[in-house]
Amino acid sequence: MYSRLIPLPTSSLLFALASPAAADPPTDVSDIELRRLFDPTVAELAAEEKGRIFIYEGLRDIDVQRALDQAFDRVENMMFIRTQKTDDQGKVKRNTDTGEAMTEDDGC
Image 1 (cartoon, rainbow, N blue to C red):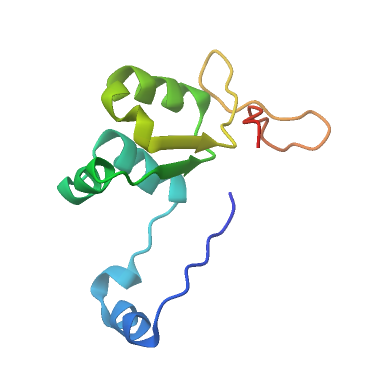
Image 2 (cartoon, one colour; image 1 turned 135 degrees about the vertical axis):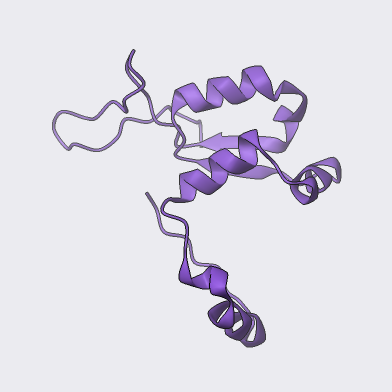
């Protein structure tokens, strides 16, 4: 998975370091994205209502299909990139030569 760096003002950084939540970072970015996709907060839904687009990177194709089935009314606020292809058991398909996850061509 790709790491993401978000610049923060110094005061925000100090607050984040002092916060107990900063001691327990999420194990995987896709966990956050899956939670946002299937169990959005009131604030996230409000942001979508105002036109915010959330970009979901590296999710499995079966998770994207589930989102399209269960949250179709919110799909205009979703963008999926680097979607990972899965087999019939839901395991990510890997390139036999490189071992890298196979992804859908997102046209970008």
